[in-house]
Image (cartoon, rainbow, N blue to C red):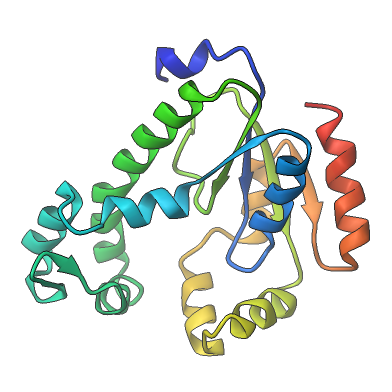
Length: 195
């Protein structure tokens, strides 16, 4: 655990869940209550941005997905989501950099912070509050399809993510985001008053 994070005198909340569960929507409620929001997905995009060390590491493993210093994310996804070993290799490149950057951002925050995490492998040993956002599988699929993905792509991604039961086990608290948003929002607001 980083000393710069362990001594932060304000709440740090990890919000996790699978694709389409509603992590970002739940994070917005925290933001409305004064929490800063850190997205590890956004950090992950930066880790593989043009000119970053992550691009060179990806190019060494999969040279055909990097052209002129730019990672073809669709081509890379096509490789790693069909091959568990390749996914593990990519995560070995990205996860340490993502966690390091997120820790720096947490330490720089002057108040309470929420970190959206799509995987359980980051911040494993930290005493942060963990909230899992879950939703019915078909609801999650519909949400992601509405953003432009195909059902098959969503199912492929889900197959490489922790299950809802695994998220529940990981979490200190669970928010079910299947039903009406007003119910979800009320649940989140109740949690905010406890952290």
